[in-house]
Structure formats: C-alpha cells, structure tokens
Length: 568
Image 1 (cartoon, one colour):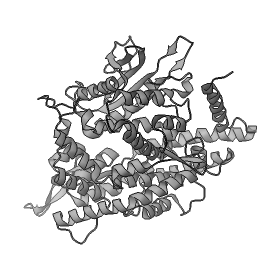
Image 2 (cartoon, rainbow, N blue to C red; image 1 turned 60 degrees about the horizontal axis):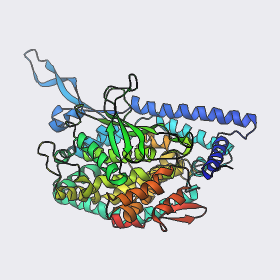
Image 3 (cartoon, rainbow, N blue to C red; image 1 turned 180 degrees about the vertical axis):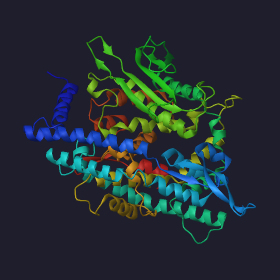
Image 4 (cartoon, rainbow, N blue to C red; image 1 turned 120 degrees about the vertical axis):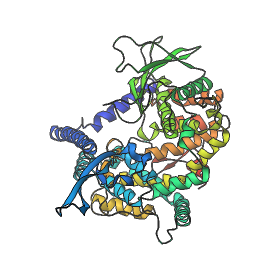
C-alpha cells in the first residue's frame, strides 16, 4: 500500500541503518561505533590544525612588499646593527621594519597572483603547501580508520563504501571516468602551459626557465590582464550586493513565475541583526518556502559561502504541506549597506552556485523530509548549483541586473565577453587540477596498501602521471585539503555535476536562459523531486537520451557537452 516514494524511503533507511552496522554482532557494532567517534575526532583535529598552523613567512626589508599588498600582511621589527661605527668604535643598532605573511589559503592565493617578487612567491608557495605538518600523521590516521570501518562493513575499501550508494556505484566506474577525462584534457592543458611559458620568456626575458609551481598563478594573471585588459574594480562596480540580490529575484520570476519578498523576523528568530528573511511566493500556489540571507562577514562566523537546510519540506496531510526553510550564509566584506558592498566576480559566481542549492530545497515538494531538496546522493547534489553558475556568466541574464553603482549604466557586452575570454583562457588547466584532486581523493581512500608507498608518494606519482606540473619535494598540500574529510572518496562528484550541468544547459537553457518553459521543465521534472526519484529518471525526464551512459553497473555522465564548451 506504500507509494513509490515511501518504498524508496524504507529502502534508504534500511541502507542507512546497515551502513551504521545495525546488522552486525555486538562486538563488531561496538567497534563501528568507536571508529565513527574516532573519525569525527580526527576530522576535528585536522581542521583545528589548519586554523592553528597556517604558516608564516617574515620578509625584510619592508620595501619588498608593495603598498597594494600591505593589507594582506602585518608589520614586524627586528634589531639590526648599522654598518657605521660611532666614536667609541661600536656599531649602532636600530629596529628594521619588515612584514609577516600568514600563508592561509586566501592570503597565499593573493600573494601568488599579485606579488612581483619571485623569491617571495617561492617562499609563500613552499610554506603554504607544507603546513600544517601535524596533519601528515592525522591524515594517515583518518585513512586507516576509514579503511578499517569499511572492511568491517563488508567493503574492500572506504572508496567502495562511500561510492556504493551513488550513481557511480563503484570506485572502478569513478576511476574509469577520471582517467578518460584526464586523457581528454591533457593535450589542451599542455598547450596552455606552452602559451604561459612563451609569454613569460617573451615578456620577462627569462628564456632558460620553465614555469615553476610558484609562478603559475602570477604569470596566468599577468597574461590574462595583458590580453583582456580587465580591471577587477571595474568589473565589481557593476555588481553591488543589492544588484546581485535583484538578479536572484529576476531568475525566480522569469523561470518559475515566483517572487521573493521580505518579511519581518519574530523576536529571537534571528541569530544576527543583519539577517534578512525572504518568502518565496507564487501567485497561484501561495508561499513556497522561506530563505534567510546572512551575507556579511563578522568575527567567529562560519567561513566561506554555504547553503543550510534548516527545515525540509514534507507532506503533513492531504491539504497541508510543511514549507522548506533554508539559509544562505556568505562572508561579503565592507559596509553592511547592500548598495555599497561590491562583489568581485568570483563572489558573484559563488552566490549563484549556492542559490542553486537553495532553489533545490525551496522548490522541493517531496512527501518526506528524508528526500527534501539537496538530500540526494552525493554525485547528484551539485548539479543544480553548477547549472546556476551558467546564469552568472550569461550576458542575457547579467544585463537584467548588473548596473554601475553610480551611473546606473547596464554592464557592457564587451566587458562580459572579456570576462568570459579570461575565464576560458586556462580552463583545461583548471579542469585538469580538479581531475587530479579527484584522483588523489579516490586513491587515498582506495584499496590498501597504497600502490606507491606513503601518502606523499601517491600524490607525487599521480601528479607526474596526470599533469605537467612539477612536484616540489617536501610539500604536502593534501594536509589542508579539507574536502578529504567531508567529501572523502566523493570529490569526483563536482566533475560529475559539471558534466551533467553542461548537458542540461546546452539542451534546455542555452537558447533562452530566462524562458518560463525551461523553468517549468527544471522545476517539474527535476528540482521538485529532491531525492524521491532515481537520479537517472530525473535526468532522463529533464533532457532525454544521451545525458549519461551505463558502465560496469554504474552511471557515467556524457562528457560531450562539456568538451564542446571547452573546445576539447
């Protein structure tokens, strides 16, 4: 007598219980519970080490850090003897000013892109890629504990345990997909590296040296700047935070015929005075859900940008539905006046990405919270968010809301085309990096012992096999790659989503991205079902044949749309 969704819910709950070891004998169940507690503690230790040991480099004299980068660093002083002697024959000492660079990821990226000093770039790259050293052992413990857990639960590896419920279904399918992608992207990434090397030699007269790892970001930034003459402050002038929120409203109005309107917060409802509450309303269906916006950075706040489901949608009775409630949490800096805050384009893209997750939750109409919105298998979860990144890059969408903060001028099409050109310039290199990260993730949590000795040897060998970048001995970036914790053996999901989103965009949205018919299809065939239907059924219902193929018991996305888009 159960509905199809209810049957699916029962099956999924049983699988969840068994993945927690409910069917095991008491001794094994106790060990599973102990390992889950250990793994949680190890993950916390890994993250704490990243915060406690970001790494630092001291630079003297202070003149080596130009004014435009001094907002990233802290002044420091050291005693130094002068070269001149006083009348008594002793040397004077004085305080020499320098700067301390903290090599946390954000500062590291800025220094690598913008510092003109090759030696400083080298020092911050090596230090930033070598901390926290304590996580070498912590990561080893995490891999070992997860492997033991998986084996008790009847799997050969943690990768098998993690991938089994997903569309891919097995590490063999994932590795086949990643190796195919690696081969396809290799030729173009080589061309991009040659282009960068040629630019460096011609522009900077250094004919004898290849691109070193600490130079890649700097020369990439310089080459993009010289070709497209882009000024990030000019781009940001069209993306005030209030404009961008207006853009999100334009999307839901055009695609789904719905509107966002502000509603007052009840006393004690908000966790910060700056939080806004919006209601998503449809003229025929009534209220669809609620969205909290917590957009500004503040001390002690969750870092980065993220979507949180506070309450999932569910059917209470034949006539009553529990509306979903979600929060979008960002960390935009500057004034708390949304008209005065201007976003760089990376932040705009991230906002649209997270908004894709929020819409997945808000438009979901499942019977059970278990399947509401983003409560889907891991390699399906990132598809809506990747799809909505396309809207952030499309001129036809941008011209509806991107206006200059002082003149009100619509963003010029030529500027958008330059932004797109700069994005695409090293797209193969960027994709190759994601493939490499996914291969590392899959291998570290794969069958033990490792094929190449310790963790560093695995990373070094995969880098040699699948990229053209140099491995710097002694570095271990994987000790602060926190995706290994929350996406353990699942990082490939971003690439799956990228391929699926490329096909959906090309087949459904590209011709007219703001078309109500495209919005109706997205909502009725895809977003409203959350995890209540098989992912393959939803993908087929949305765009028909050709979006995926079966391989060895699993599902692999079609890669042709992404390859066409990237000219691979």
